[in-house]
Image 1: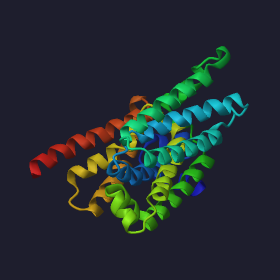
Image 2: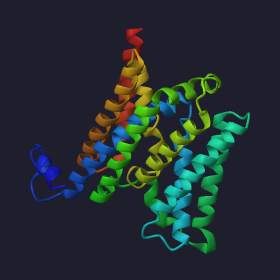
Image 3: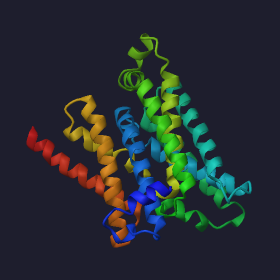
Image 4: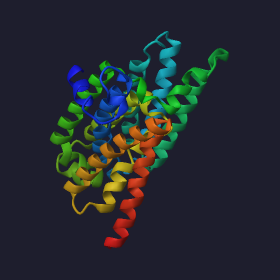
Amino acid sequence: MELWYALVDLLPFEWAQPGHMYFMKNALLAVLVISPLFGILSTMVVQSRMSFFSDALGHSAFTGMAIGSIAGLFAEPLWCAVLFAILFALLFTFVRRRTSLASDTVIGVFSSTAVALGIFIATLGGQSFTKFNALLIGDILSVEPGKIGLLALILLVVVVLWACSFNHLMLSAVHPALADSRGIRVFWQEALFSVAIAVVVTISMTWVGLLVINSLLVLPAAMARNVARNMRQYHLFSLLGAVAAGIGGLMMSYYIDASAGASITLCLAALFLVTFFFRKQRQ
């Protein structure tokens, strides 16, 4: 982290001055790690028409947090939330492949069940729900260097998986039957993709906020589709847009004292609006 702090000290901002506001420097590094994760996964989420899947996963992660709290793990219930979200993602993939229901219907069933179960567990025995309020909004300024290292490791794993399985993932998303006929194990491709989203959403939820985390997995790719002319541009614009909005949102939240997660989302929405009109003019 010392190298990172030394680099940030060169920036022309008052919070970047040496020796203080380490929370802001940590938050900036976290944004630079989280944003590419969402930018990469966003393209597959939109392509697979699973835009609300991350929302359902957020609800399942909240349920995992509640279970961890009941089990006496409230000091660090994150790992319980990760495990529950992974199980949720695998079960969702299994049910989705075994039923003729549309994906949005299956997502609705799982999402409503997860949030109801989470609230039930969190309020069981007359407990107060207020201790979970921070999960709804998030606070990226509270991110710790150790968690940033974990995010960086997850980013590396996701990039490797994406590079190795991109063609199979894309074909499975666009035409599952054709992928099956080509010998691609569609279920395991979808399961791998779902687990990756589950881990990223759960780890990031504490800092981004449950209420807006779904938008971070939809808006980057939606913005990119407005201006991309080919698949390479589609993924590149999604990643760059996510990073730009992440940095811009963090700066905006600092100077106007607002939620970082909401600020990043608004920056992404603004990029989508600009690219939408650019798309209309180009056509």
